[in-house]
Length: 227
Image (cartoon, rainbow, N blue to C red; front, side, top):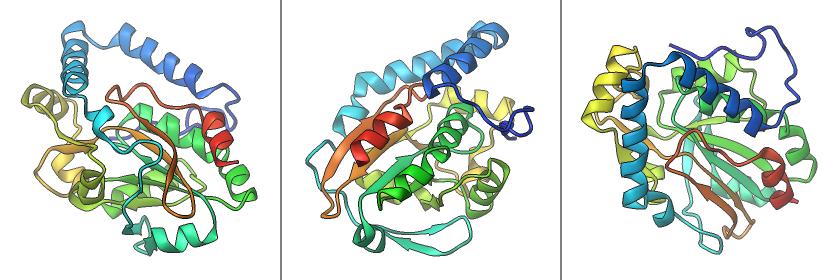
């Protein structure tokens, strides 16, 4: 259960924008995934948008809660240490099984050096286990840490967490997306994708939280906010 890396796909460099990469994946889904399956995902996104989950999350000017989370190697990473060095880019993703998360992480990895060059840090957070985070980091050769948010405890503080609806649970189970195994708990909870740029004092400078998991902010937009 994984999405191929760029290397496995036969290319080591993808110069397209993230928008173009995700549009291609949406097109492939529209072409090959049965309509009734697509309808389940469409309904889930519509229900989440109706709840306004993204609008309820932290916005520009808010203070980010402090955190201490283990990375894909089991090393403890704290917001205090990261912010002591400079600004922080913090992305919440669903997991290595999600093609849109993979596309975003590979795109963010391509600008990780530019983020570091201005004294900032980049980390991503997901509810998947340390082993799954390690597999994702290793497979896609990511240039930044993947942090483990067990039971979505940190994401919950930011108002990002939802429980996967039962019809989508059944669909995921049929397509070998075993969230209880991947996340190490039976809650069937996920964060909506979100990215924040955080000032050294913890204030949020840029915020993007979207119930539509196929829509992610462009890395260059994030880089601009970091600078």
